[in-house]
Length: 313
Image 1 (cartoon, helix red, strand yellow):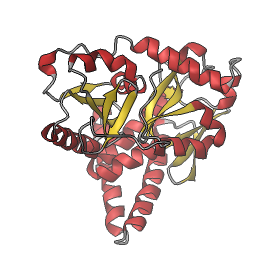
Image 2: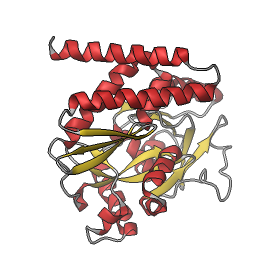
Image 3: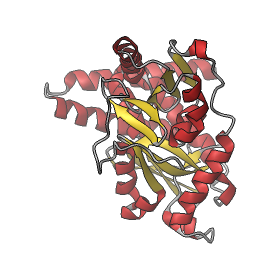
Image 4: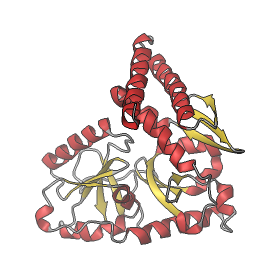
């Protein structure tokens, strides 16, 4: 059996186990979700052991594994995998196999010390921030920044093999305060993204444009970078980030345009491996404004809430 055959066979077998587990679960949603989380964790541990035969794989709890090898330990969190499997149970086996392989590649040479130049930010939702707080406690608050709606900028260490979330103690080991770590991550990211905003023309205004890649989604943390596009569109720019690697934009805030955006967002969110937000956001000179269904010109953020316009940095 070659590598491709093994991958397909393992993925199909895992998916079959999960489907059987779901079918055997009680009818209520909570029990179903708990059963999926437990089975997913158990099957992931088995797959991790296949890819890392010299490592100890311990189930810490639902959706959390501890991997120990050569005196070093890491935690593998399966929340994104779980979210994907809830919406794509037939493809879940493939996703488990891929997750184990990615973990192996990321840690095959150990973890080099983090560096100042690798500090970046990514855009994630509030649920992701809550998961980080569960791992690291409230100290993580200094490494996250609310953007708009339920979206946040989160400090990461972007190394050649993986993106990881540094602990506050690791930031301090660089000779930085935690607050300085966030500032440096924002500055590094913005410098790298100056050419990441697309060049569009007025004729693109009425079209729904889709941009694929983490970098496009990360530009949401810097609304000022989108000013030239908004100006090109006559001041109206609507964006959505339904997943961590796709960004939708349109230069039209009419009801038909917003409906088109909502439908596209719902479809991507339902099938994405890492869904992010189902909301639409309108560009203003002061930052983004969350707009559920009405034109951006009528949308007003609630004072004192996270939905307030993102301040341009």
